[in-house]
Image (cartoon, rainbow, N blue to C red; front, side, top):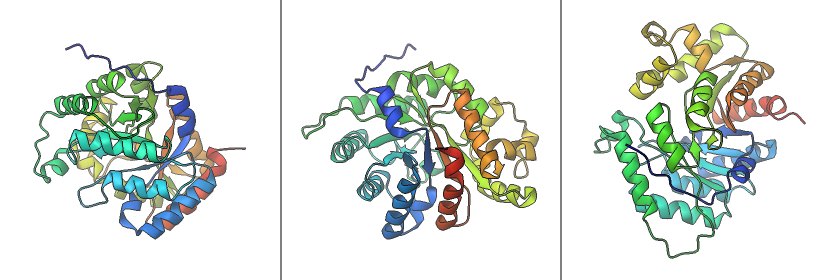
Length: 308
């Protein structure tokens, strides 16, 4: 099937500049109070990170209202959903909710969309057995949704894409992709699949700890849930990891590849590997027990990630 190309006046170079080279990915924001989030946003903005990425889980905060809270607490920070599930709201609500946010906060919102994972989707009463077709139909419906309120420019949208077919769809129907739980090698392959222009903004989890045993234990605890999800397992197999790497909490090779650990300079080198592989922006997710520890890690990382 030949995918139709949706043209968009979105200025990709300007979007990449606004996102900045380095952003922050924080799942923990969904588990704290609004006041704690406001303080966290102020700290992240003061440190110089360009974009804050948030996820969405069935038991967590709804993505678009959550984004409104974060946008209202910041002055210049971009806020992106990473991702809002297409099974969480219909296409009309997604399109017009995103337009509302994008206009109200003067272009500081990016809509990241994804098909999530079958166990999470089925728990909401939906059937996700045809995710690629579902995403294509969802984008069609979004593009056909009218909006009579002010909307000065199209909302940038990115897709959660890991494997070739979704990457191909994103290249023609979105401004780019936001891969999660990936390696620099995945970034290299994604850039080759996308071509030179679309936004490529991978997430990179890190553990700021130089003790190998403790750091890998932290990384394994974080990775455990993802290593039970077929989407990620299939993606990792395509990258050359074996079943032996994926079993029993993940081999040291796998863990070190997906969730690097070390001092800020070592971790900054891993982020640079994503840029060298073709990333425009990397969303850094410090893995720690509390939001306060994550913010401390971001403070430690900032001089290495954003020198000067």
